[in-house]
Length: 468
Image 1 (cartoon, one colour):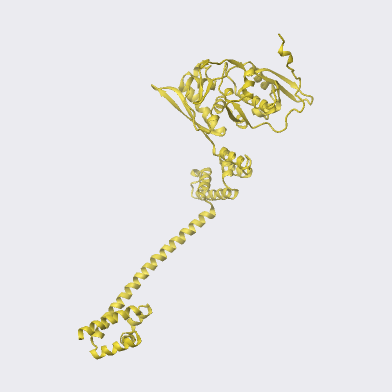
Image 2 (cartoon, one colour):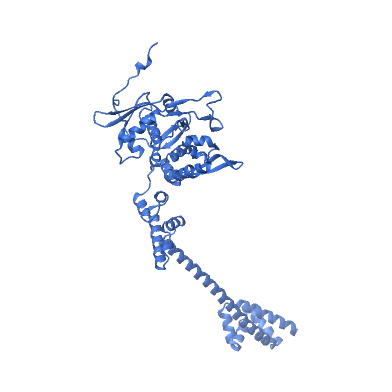
């Protein structure tokens, strides 16, 4: 039988044209079979980071080829792990050496139409599940330029999963670099897939132990210790240091915890950055100076970046000025210790409060109060005017009745003739003006002449009927 291994060419140095153009990828589509696994020993934080970074490197450099060996610069690997200022290469090499010896138990879930169901049996529905290594071998080389280079080859199963993804989750390499806890990193990779769905199914306790790497420690068999020492801190780290927010609830059977369900949501900053990417503005569409200015006033960096994305620069600066002035007033009153400047800035931005807007609101309130006072004064004045008109009308009515009653029938006929001739009561007006000038002039000034014409006509008609 022909030996196929002789056909494998083992390069001593990276191939021509390496490294590829462009920066290290910040997002990697990681196959779910490489996320849901169980290791035969507990992995460290560095080893978990190395797994994702090495997979992303192989996907980035040899995506369209079938290279067996992959290369990555040691300095690049240190930067992606989070050791930008560390020169402890020996610790990195030791972590990779141990990682190459770890046996992994892949195919831990069923990709059925009902969703992802983690499995705890080695054989389900006729599908065998076995152990495999993450890396077959790893070498530390030096290229012609004197750079330290790591050459590695993925295990057969891992290479197959990495090149033939059936269902994957997009992993943010930048977030992987920031996370500072091994259980938190395992939890982040597990939950990021569900960020759009919003929540996971009920995950059995034993499978959660396997994924978090606590199945090898009997100390965490007690669910109270697991939640207090591992799960709750991991959830807090993921929420604080990643781009998703996580919470969980426990399922109890006879007061015993049997499973956990996690609720996952993308942070507003991440949603805004993703929308900015879609709109063509890039993921860093905020002013760094504004972020630093907000942080100098006590605002958390994540909240400051969110504010810088969601609000214009002028609005943020006006909200800061308004909040600082409010703090100065509180200090002058001796209440500075109780004043929460970051919270005040957040509330000012949400409510749209600025020095000018508050001044405009106060001016508008004063105008509204003045208009209301003027309206009330006008109503009162109108009521007083109506009262005065009624009093004058009553006096003229009494005087007009007395005057009309003193006319004879001939006088009435003469007056009626004048009325018909000129169409008004001018004759009667003149007589009333001469006898009662004060009251009549008031009626004349108020434009009540037509109403008084009707009144006098009715008086004349009544007296004429009475005389007849």
